[in-house]
Length: 326
Image 1 (tube, rainbow, N blue to C red):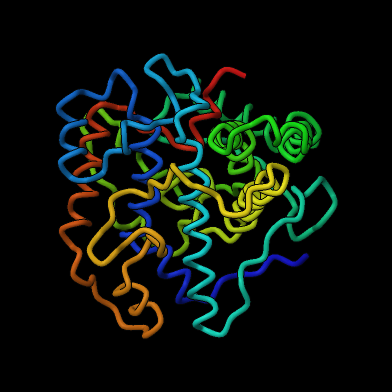
Image 2 (image 1 turned 120 degrees about the vertical axis):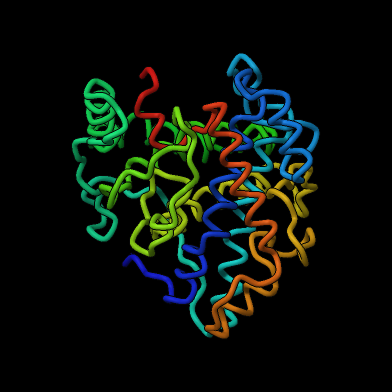
């Protein structure tokens, strides 16, 4: 399998500030929602802006325990399935082939097109030397051949085993996949970033500078940029195939989704249609015309929510797992 790149118009759409903010914010709100550091006034602000998870549904409880019975894992699977659907619909309209996927997670020396990018020494200027050293060491481990065997190989075997899939709810499968295999695959296939985007979790909370909207910022370790990287779609194509395996094992023909949260539905959006873009933005991509459309208030709301979350220092990103205890 040769890695394919998306048409420039589609890449530009994915790299747009609106799309970047939606992906970043969906992960950030969801991951922080039950964090005790997220103040009640900030939670209410997010609710008022239409960005609160339904029924306060989040993958972790206040103690940081992973929840398997509240459908938040369905949200994870459904939202990314909609992203895949959205891109595939655009590709079909443009006369391009649909997204390709991994049939299995590439093993070391199996396919040079999906060779794991080399590790690098983390040098985030906003972290101290000890933190950068810890992240560098963990990154080398995640990218090693040994890590491909265990835990990645063990996880893949577990999530494709029919007996296990028959015992798990779809929501439990989603949360387990996200917090184990998925997050680590993002860092395993990450290349050294073109720079370290400052986290909004700063002493003096700042917004995301527009320079990080550049097409070349496609770092797999950051939710603001990961979906711009072509490997993202192979990785998430494999995750998405787990939904179909689960449905087949459990004899489910039409999945009765409960977790369908994709963030706030902006103007012109409805469930059952791709939720990550408005019809106006899709038309903009296909026509090649620029402009922000009619939803700039939604963009401003997202930017303000990022600042509010940052003020509570509750935003986590894929690269944060490099600081977690092994």
